[in-house]
Image (cartoon, rainbow, N blue to C red):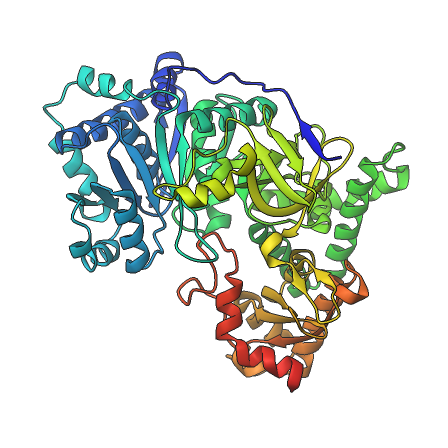
Length: 598
């Protein structure tokens, strides 16, 4: 199939903007808890009335500070209550939000603030302030910087004490659906980040249709979602706005050091994550079972869960024997795994990269369905996702209702719909290239089945062509290899080479446990074990599993374990965990040469 669309389930208001949601919630659901605020000893509930009051107070401060309608105000912080509050406060001041990853370098901060022309900035920490100050001379338009950890929000609220509610409410109503809501800079695997212009209409079209299509997951007064992805990323922002739109309770988590404990105390009904999170849950549970001498039981339970899930897609369904085994393992294993995820959750939404069929079936088999989706910054997050009642594992689902997905002659995925960006800020040439013929060109390669389910097979610019002329899409095999507990990252190489090979980094979290179980010296690291025969044999098993998913010509013949990690600090990965292949290839050129020439 070359093209597929679904009718819209939500009509975008022509004269409204996203601040209407906060006012509506306070009017219609005044006592409903809409936010969970993380504090040292747990969570504090915030009602719709309290949230509106907090948003108004911050907006008044921005107005008093001289922020005008259409001005750009930047946010640089981890995912926390204040981020959500300030996001809506900036909109209530009539301004445009510019997210900045809290891990950004001073050079990246300088580029985003200068390119967007931000007049004010809220940062979280002293380190963020120092980064901004180091480039402040190149930011003549930046007038104000508030630091949350130094009482910046209180100072902002105090500044607006003389502004009345009517003034801020009038400012909040000034923006219309087609006005700019935010400029989100792509994390950029190549070149400087580009600012994607997203309107209030784009968020309404995106979140309105997501909430309607996944209605059982968004029950006001019952459902809750824990957001621990970066709020600076468009996926996190979509979740934030959708939660407020529903409304359901939204918890925000600045870091995932104690994710298991936080899941247990917040007890979300819905979890948002990227594949690496779900891989770690699975690998961690399996490693714990092995350490407790129950590895074989876990493996049998895992195989049963996968078989049970696969049988759900057959006309006859699971057999009696399979149902009995499934019920037994539910008591022994599955309910404990669900408890690790908070105990109340039945669904998760995964994006950012392919989850993999095996994990998809495993989680559905244990009673925790992970719905895969697909999208980009330019599509305001999800442009396709699996419906809760018609999941097709191995695909990223059907198009967002009200949008169109088309497959071009060369296999590229093209998009059309109200959820798309308006273009790139200050970059007409890039906009014209991306929106050729009125369709957004994603750069991804994919297929549509007869029911309109989309499968992504790779990126157009990442296709390798071996010396023998074989086209290879790295994503499929990389994702399979990376699913192994010991593998942190995998990058396939082979462009212009006689065969396909891979660079592999080791997951330090699991390496220590593996090393102890295999009699390796205490304190062993990837650098000291990279040539260890046992470790290489274990990585070879991961490679063999990856090779099983592709043809012989696409399979990895050799690999090289690296002594270092791919890090954001070294420029190897983006804040959204995408590999910067050109940087990795350059920095590890000698390692690649060693693979091919010894």
